[in-house]
Length: 141
Image 1 (cartoon, rainbow, N blue to C red):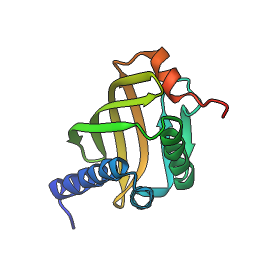
Image 2: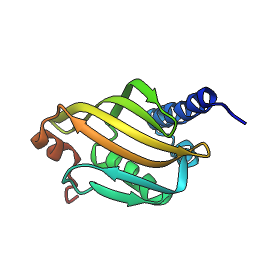
Image 3: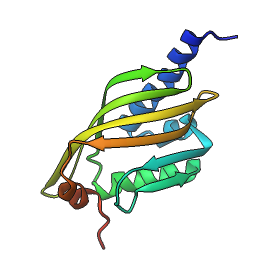
Image 4: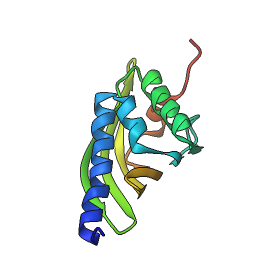
């Protein structure tokens, strides 16, 4: 039986691996870190906002965000806090699209079950909402 400290370290490792895989754009590794029935909660009013369910849906969302931002999304984990049930990651993020640039801060809360991300909530601040729309909104191609 794992003790509380060992479990917290392992759960934090899942989230660290997730951000490393996102940085590498390694969708196969990301897929392995997500529970098949993952629940993903994006804030805001953009097209990608709202609750998303299922590994394939979340992978599709992450791929779409890369596509609309022309692959410029950057996420830097600057701190972690682990509890018995959750891992919280403090994130500095940015993205560009053409001449538009947006950056901000995020608190990401992950629920880890059996070594996989089962649920995630994101809380953002410190960004320009107009720049966010300019960068992340889908456009007719």
